[in-house]
Image (cartoon, rainbow over all chains, first blue to last red; front, side, top):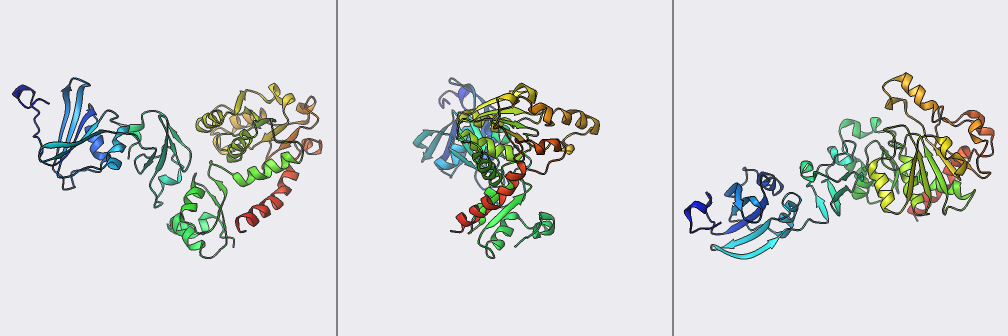
Length: 155
Length: 232
């Protein structure tokens, strides 16, 4: 993102206050929003850029959320689909905090259990719960294992 | 209190298991739960003020049966380092899942003999291997029966086979008969969680290897002990 060169300027504006999620894996921005519970019906002003040219990733997605500072617990869940993402907290146009994402050891209400007979795939008042063991996610209720394509199981 | 099956409980009216458990936990000192969904007992434990005993959750686990199985084996031999054969429907047979996990703690070698598609679920197989268990798959019982200390037989369920003729053909290959027991270890113990249908020839009942009725009897003291323990 080079602000001085018009050719390299993003089509989305810089924000005064809020959160910029940078270096999202190209094409995953909408899934990131879904994980964060930003559906369009919420009040945040959100800008999304996909397939932006990036030196590090060749292509990347970027999400900017105005007037909302995301907390670590909220953003770590996006590590499932965007392990290289960086979270920039912006105040008065300045980056006041910048950090990466870490896949949490327990995922609550993020993944749908692939076992149709699992008790979490019913109308019971519980969130799905998965423990991360290395790159595998294991259902805490039925022990079903998601070992590949985890993002396809995101609720 | 016997609340009967799910079909006669408030769950048939649409009540969640969570609500049922919260209600019943106000009536009783412990709950023994058998439920068709995997993970039901774990969920119930989150909504209960009293102990929950898992009496079988779908194709998941059946830990109380496993305690009975371990006790029955222990009556014949030490639990450590045994060679055990699991035969039958290992995919949906929840008793074998719990037993395999338990025996993995005793350094057992677990031999599996199951029709294609009804072997141990990959997740359980991998979990056992990660825990250091030795799991060896066999095509036929004849390959391994002479080396076994325990043979654990489970029922092949007819509904798993759309074609009745195919079920008959396949089930014959997983049927234990006296002729297969000519070269087995003297102390071999044959177990079955019951009910059996055709998977053990009734003539095996009269051999010294049959322990399944003793195993069923053991259900009384073992379950008494469990109830005593959780309500202590």
